[in-house]
Image (cartoon, rainbow, N blue to C red; front, side):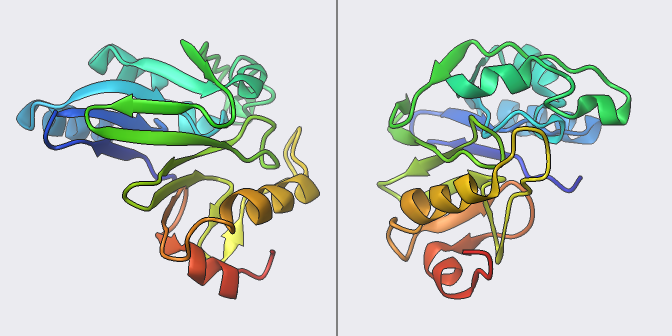
Length: 199
């Protein structure tokens, strides 16, 4: 599905997080090797939402890292239901039970870094973005892409709710914020405000 996963870590402390876990078997080996070679401790697997392409390797990566799995509280229903996380479409019945549930505004800290949880429903009810305010980085999952937005034609998707999330939660961030989406290439808030045809 061409999904992106991110290994985001604090070089000073060696603590980090995985943002989403849509990994292939080749990715498992690369990530594991990189973690070991750089002495990184993965504190959490932070899920932006529960669709299968972003969670298909959660169990594998949890076993490799002993990290806790985190999601927004409203995404638990998607993670635990194969029809809602769409894994039944590819012949699987994925169920993931998160270890920790977030609310809007919660902050996850690791090492000297902090990621703020921005609840951005629309693609899914419990979809979130993770925002590093200090460094100006936003991991936007399937809420916002470069010149595009997440789909809303899946179960529980809502186009108007997604537009509201982007307008009120993301387009109010500083223009210089670097956006790392769940699919495709990176962008900036300024570029999306000026060029995104959906919002």
